[in-house]
Image 1: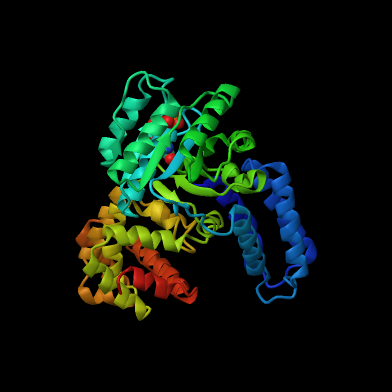
Image 2 (image 1 turned 90 degrees about the horizontal axis):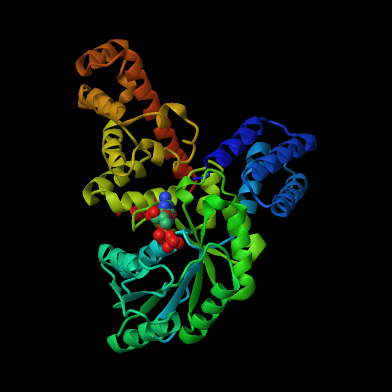
Length: 442
Ligand code: GDP
């Protein structure tokens, strides 16, 4: 997610981060580069311009130049401005109406509308314990209603039985009526898509909206289409009352222009991000976490949430207890590696860890390499795993021989451990630790 933007920005900040002093001219130079990075990421021009002006003004005004860690100050100011740009807080669904609460999902064909409908239904059912009914109003595309029924079976969410020949507004009314009678909390209406925003589509959306009075009207747009996604959102919101946006295919979006411009240009919050094809690949959109990922500062909270879903409780508690003491030894690393393999590999996770982004050694590790790491760790004595500092040249040779690897590889492993230990310490300093521990169940 946002890799190319993120790489560009870390390039800019790397130049200023470690420096003891920054002149106003240095700050302005850096901001010029930030602007280029944003434009390359396909951020709307006025948005990029205003962003950079604002950040420059704050950075020059806020005594960055005199601060002890001026580079860090600049990064913090950029981070805060990014969070604001993305919408400050996570915008939640507002379903506090007399049940059933209707969510109308709209968007162009191919944007990921039907998939997102099913993902959202699954999420509301599993995370919020809602009783959810889905209905497809897409009578234009023959297989559309059946597609939603198939996804419904996968997601274990009910879909409204299909009645051939029924019109969208009638389907909507029937869905709301059945939901009322059968005690559903939420009805999600998957409306018809078109290739372009056109009058017929808008007329249909309006008719459905007045028939079903949705509590939420969510527009689904494809983040890979960059500024087009923003323009589609402008087009829709000029005609109907959107309450939010679901931005799909964020998993493949290296640039991030749509995500960064959406709020500012349309005034509509991004409520969810689609991050894959699987039905659980839908995340609430948290501006602060996304900003953290863009700036390579890691997304610790999401990392921990992901871990909490995957990790065995007793392992998690053991790790939390040790980390509480600021400890992270090679036994922990071995455990982490096992869990990381389960969670999509080290590369995916490293990107979420503070300070890990751009650490080539860590992110280049593939599955085969993970197996070699495990072999090296099982060739160590438990004392060595707990106190890696005692591993001298002789011990390294023994470990390499025992695991069929080389001393260089053992060195690499030790270096990686040091980096992770450092990241853990950093995390603790950042104050994120108590939250982490409580989420791990510690
Ligand atoms: P619709 O025409 O708007 O209803 O689009 P669909 O829901 O049928 O989705 C079109 C394709 O996009 C399908 O193959 C989906 O699996 C895929 N898709 C939807 N959302 C995402 C996402 O967030 N990430 C990825 N990688 N693929 C997605």
